[in-house]
Image: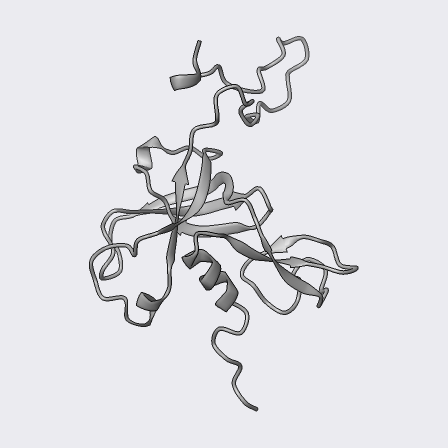
Length: 171
C-alpha cells in the first residue's frame, strides 16, 4: 500500500504555529466535541471521524514537569520539560521557559512559539517552528485558579480554596 504523506494530519498545526496561533483537532458533527492532540483522522475520545481544526487559547496550567541533566545533542542542559494542560483539554509536552525550582504543579502557563532549543543542528526539524510553555501571572483582579485543598476534616476550620495574593496583585 502507498505510504501516507508525512504531514497529512499535521501541516495546518505547523503552519498556524509559525503564524503564532495554536490549532488543535476537535471532534465535530455528532461527535463528543472534545479537542485532542496529536492530530489524527479519528477522535481518540469517542471514535468519531468528523474532526476539524480549531484555534484554541494557548493558556493552561502545568500538569507535571521534570528537569533533564543529560540532554540530546544540541539542547541546553539542564532542560526543563513538562506537560501543559490547556484550558481546551489536551496536554502538550514542551520545554518550559523557567527555572525548575520556580515551578509548581498548577502554575498558570501559555504554550507559545519559540526559537529552536540549543545550538546544534536539528536536521529535518529545522524546517518546523518550535513551541514552549511559559509561566504567566494571573491578571490582577481576576480570580486565581482554585488550589486543591482536599476534604476538610470533621470539626476543622474550612480550608481556603486559593492562596492569598502575592506579587504585583497583593494589596
